Structures are given as C-alpha cells and as structure tokens.
Length: 522
Image (cartoon, rainbow, N blue to C red; front, side, top):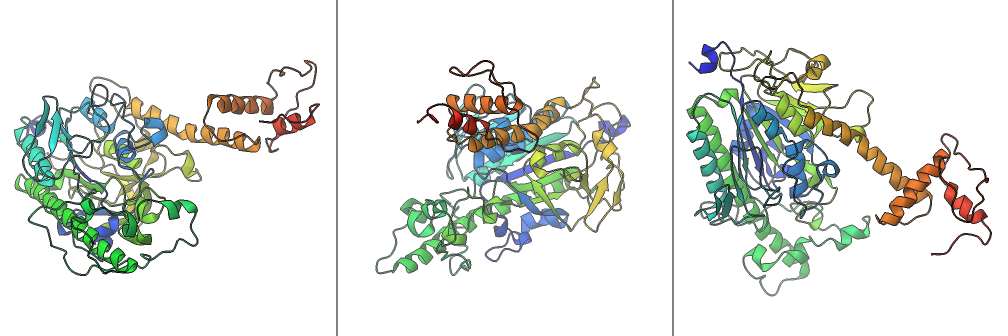
C-alpha cells in the first residue's frame, strides 16, 4: 500500500506528455491516415479520447513549444520565431506542478535556446538536444554539461526518460515530457524501419496545385517538393531522364518513405512507454498525452514543411488517456488549441497538495458563451469542458474527477464554480496566479495591438513597427479621445475635434489636408 493511502490521501495522477516534431495528424491511423499505420499511438485514443480538431496558434517549432509550456500566445510568452529564445523563468504548467509537489523532467527536444536564462528551469531532471539535434549519436545538454549519446535519437530519448522514472524513490507524483526530434527534417530513419514504406505511396489530390487562386506568398514559398528538397533530404540524386512532373512524384515518394519510417520508430517508442506503465500497474492512473508541436504538409499543394495557415499545417494530433478517470473510445470534436494544454493539465491533478484536493482529467476548455475566440489567451474556467467519466470508481491510489453531468455522447459540462475554485499550493491559500495573470494579459493584449494597427491604417501611415510610427499611433488615439496637445504651427486655442462613437478614425488625415499648404510630403 502506498504512503498516500496509509495517510488517507488519494494519490494524484502521474503525467506523461509525448511530444513529437512535425507529425501531421493525417499521418496517424487514428485520424484516418491513408499512408501509414500507428497502432501504439492509436492505443492511447482507444483507451481515452481523440481530439478531432486540435490546432496550433503559430505553426513553428519554438513558438508552439513555448505556448504548450506556458499556456499563452506567442506575443505574451515572447517566443514568436524559430530563433527567439524563451525566458525560462516565466511560469509554466511544469513550474506549477513542481510547486505542488510533483517530480518533473524533460528529455529530448527543447529548441527554446540554451545558456543562462534559456536552459530548462523548474525541472528536477533535464536532458535536452542542442537546437534541432541529430538523428544518430545525438548531443545532449544537461545540468552536468554537454555529451554525446550513442544510438538513434528516438530510442535514446525514450531510454533516458524511462531510466529517470526507474530512478525515482518515494510516492511523489511525477510529470515527464518526452520530446522527440522525429519526424523533423531531414527524416533519417533507423535501420529497423528504413525501407518500411518503399513502394507506391498515394499522392494527395492537391499535389499538382497551380496556386492560381493563391496569393504570391504561396507561389514564392520555398517548400515545394518539386523544387526545394535537397540531396540531403532525398539521400540520393534524382535519376536522369525524368520530366519535371516525374521528378516531383519521385521526390515525393522518397520524402514520404523516410518521413513515415521515422513515424514508425516514434510509434514503437510510444509503445515502450505504454508497456512500462502497464508493467508497473500505472497505466490506468496516468494521464498519458500524445501530440505534435504542429501539423505538416505531406504533399498537399505540392508542399512539405508547415508555417502557412492551411489546415494540414495547423491541425495537431492530440490523444489522451487515463482509463481510471476517462471512458475509452471517445472523440471530442470541439475546437482545441495548444494554448489550452497547460491549463487542462493543471486541472487534472488540480495542483494541490493539502486542502481539499479534487482532481479531474480535463479536456479542452472553451470561452464563455458569447465570448469572442480572439479574446481568449488561455483557459479561464468559464464554459470549460471535461471528458465524460462514466463508471469511474476511485481507488486509494487515484483521485476522483470532479462531478459533471453529461451533455453529449462525447463530452460532459463541468460546473463553472468548480473551475473557478482557487488552486491552493502547499501551505498557502494563494491560487496559481502566475499563469492566470498571464491569461488575463493575453486576453486584452490582442485587442490593444489590433487597435494600434487599425489606427495606423486609418490614418494612412505605413505599417513599419518603428518608434516614429508607434508615436504617431499613440497620438492618433489621443486625438480621437480629444486629449492631444496642439502641434507646432497650430493655434493653441484651435478647438480639438472629438470623434463621436462609431465614427471612423480619420482625424489626422483630415487635419493635415486642411492645413495651409496642404498635407506634408514624405
């Protein structure tokens, strides 16, 4: 019997998040893949929930990973590009779990910078790849320094993760992030899976898209399979004597053969984690999550890569299981984003170690009825949704979910009061305020940013983010409110017009045109 049971306290669930890189949802057989099979990944959904409409808010590796950790949009957490390092001191769901008594670890791809202020923080154990990392004999950075691990990256990352779990003593709950490099470019499969998909792979219907109805950005994008895959990507030169169209299809087959072989290795290693949990009797009581940092083009529109706001790029696979608390075989068809992950994970063990712990394995949370999705930077608790929990019987080693009433065959609506209840830390009655404060910030900042951009546009200013234009945008808002000081050359007693509610913001343009000599030239 566990120490938690002896003390009359239910044991909080352990958490495993397996996060891959560039694994398209349409390359997971649970999502109806026409090109491959992923039986061990599918197993998570069979014992839990498959989220049909999970989307990334910024389809790039680093921004998505920062959003998953912090539960905030890119403009709030500061990671907007591939080369922007994270301020690792900011609150994350991992820091909240650690404060609540969880043992925490991350192994594998970090890709959020390294060095002082950027190395992983709030992890009891961290062992991460340098930048993108290598497929074979990858270099790892840990608190002890830099070293090389022999072997294939997907296998090594799983080995290190399970080794850390085996090393844990005591009965404290734990959370481990297993972050694979695969199936990121340059798609280098291991020997066991190389050639597994040799042969004909179906070509997407839009493979020969001529971009006739697309913008110039689509035509200029350097991610066309026919033109932008390199010899390093293809592992061999293109055969001679082929037409342009034949070369494009040959490259597609080579690209997909290696990409899917990398996915097959990931699937096997997901199975290793599931088997480890089952052998120790922890599978039913562990929140097991599988996802990718974004989607990926698999020949759609003739492309590889991601970035663009197309469904293939934005859609993320997301499967979750915790059989003791969540009925298996469910499909959630509501919209979920990677901003939702952090708060949903915190809702699972409720982040509490002392007073009145009530945990729920929580599905995605949604904005309040009638609220605009643009105003949602993170989950707020109102109108949230939890997965159905039919037939749940708590044991001494598990935590019962919050009571909910079923609203459909796939979801159940949780009481708003339950989610507004303060999440207590050990020895304190304070809430998890750091993440929630950032939620509030991210709810208001998009509106402010959009207002500034509108001001520039309505006043005829260029959109360059220069200090000069920011000053002009500020003055534009001041004029609209009737609070601007008169400019040089204008009479101090000249009345300042005030914009009536709903009127367009065109005051500065009108004033410049009405001055002697007309508007200034630039």
